[in-house]
Structures are given as C-alpha cells and as structure tokens.
Length: 136
Image (cartoon, rainbow, N blue to C red; front, side):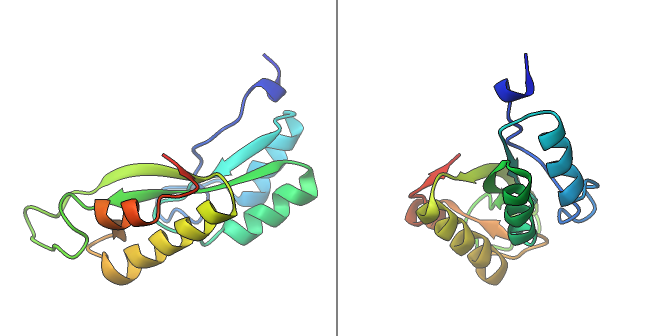
C-alpha cells in the first residue's frame, strides 16, 4: 500500500491540550513525505490550529480536512449535574465543504459558550441544527 492509498482522519496536535504532542508543521511534513494526498485535523473540542493547518497543508500540496473531536454532553449542554453530567463522549466531525466548516465553527463556539462543563460540550440539539456538510 502506498501513501496515496491511505489518509489519516483522526489526528491531535499541540492544540489538543494535555493530549496531542504532534506539531502541525511536523504532521503535515510527514504526510507529504509519505505521499499521502490528504490529512485531517481533529483536535479535542477546539479549532485553534485550523488556519495554521490549512495554510501548512496548502503549501505542502496536501489536501487539508478540517475537523474536530467534540465532546458530547450525556444529556443537554446546559445540564451540569456533578454525577449525571461529569462524563463526556467523543465524536469526530469532519467538514465536507464550506458549509460543514461553518457549522463546525458554530458547534465548537457554542460548546465553549453554552456547554462548557469541565470541557466544551455539544448536545444532540445543536448537532442536529448544525449538521449540514459534516461527516461523523
């Protein structure tokens, strides 16, 4: 199997605080070196590295796939019970197009502004409202 036959769709960088150790430029550089046509960025709950990732991929001739590994609230994003709402579940979302990217940015922003409880969380309500152009 050559690099052109495989694409990593779930990657964390230094922007996944306490979880990712890979720097954006190193990730993209290695992907280009291996001849992979594309790579996804799916940091935990944030899109801090999206612009740097996109620009670095474009310069390296690698197709950038923008995404995020969001935290799902077990009930609703406004619920904050110390027992019932402590755990979050992960869901990888990838933007299929510009609409998907815009919806992903809305979801991540709402997760921080409305759903933050230990971590930025989305729920099924806002996921359903902003799912167009997203691949889960």
